[in-house]
Image 1: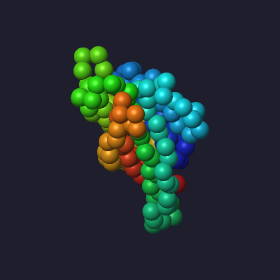
Image 2: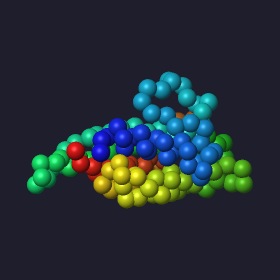
Image 3: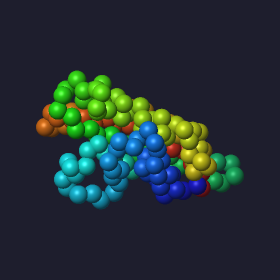
Length: 143
């Protein structure tokens, strides 16, 4: 188990899940300064990778955290939150991201021991024309 495998699996799931087919791109690492033309998007940003403790058999229990941000661009303020007949709202995006990853619970197809997802915040884009949801993923693995 390695952090690179976990990150690769997360990105693969988010890019290929049928429930997220409306997402135009999944961004990770270096990206263009202006990516406003690619909404609806998901950004995956590694936050930390720390050793929690050394186990009795000398393996390390590590905790990898990443931020998964789903962003939409919709003019109508109500539709930004709840969606409408033609657009997914930010709550739909949150649900679909979590559902896509939870299909692989508890171990992301053997890439980690277990993981947790928690929604940290919702935010409005500076322009007021869209929303972002921030989901923290916490992944436990050994090496």
